[in-house]
Length: 376
Image (cartoon, rainbow, N blue to C red):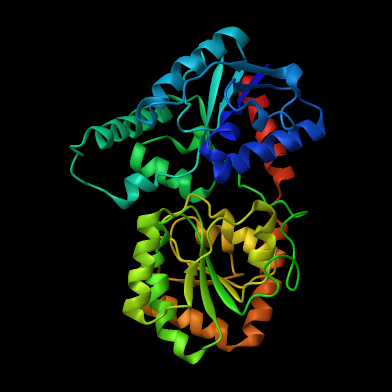
């Protein structure tokens, strides 16, 4: 018996890569029908999983959500109760908040990245209560990773980091790449909600050091005068302080009306947002995989991304790759893409071909094969 923790479909993770992974895994495992795992869900927000999980094989248990700082401790008790009820041969833990040992069989963890460790090596220990609880949570998670029976790493980069930074043996990890929903993400230029927009460069991601928005904005400010009709659109979960940051830099760079945050973009409109962009700019400092790169490629959008972490592994030769710490490099790549229609067409062609190799069907097939192998 395989038990899969599906609670990321009911938390804030449902809007992120973790939720996309779990949703696609469930969908394709159920479509294949050769394995019938059990799923774990929470009583809270059951409407979010009603049409996703088979009710006959879904165990729902109560799980508090507040206070958020110690949510993961509630989750530990919740998961242990579920394991006691199901007693699975294999427990798949796709949520870093939900990694516990399975006393009745094997535990397989999913490792997305070690970004927090890589971006802040040797950082002083936090002093505030909330920050100390978060630090404790991450250190506990890293300790548990070392004790998992097997780990699915979503990239070779993530597996290498786990070996180098946590001392985890490579032979206890298997790389299974994420996929793209090619029914949704396909060439969409001239279609959908963003078809009537002026030319724009797109950057997607929550506000933070890792997503590199400050360098993207500075690079755009240097090329904006040469391309007066082009705008820069940011999309992602931003808060009011993030919007204030953008307004301040727009004034500094004299970009009022040229660079803006789009606010909430409906999931159904994402293919149009990607597909109508002149270029997609994703020079992240660290990524465990970089799913937006593949989604943009599948939509036929030229991509600029980083030479670091997993991004060269994902993009292959189908994107312009730059040093993400160099504004000059990001500027040069923008200038190339905006100024050369032939290059845009070539990158679009290569991107579509590259993205076609990454499918959720393959992700699900390889995951189930691994879980069977681990269970013996």
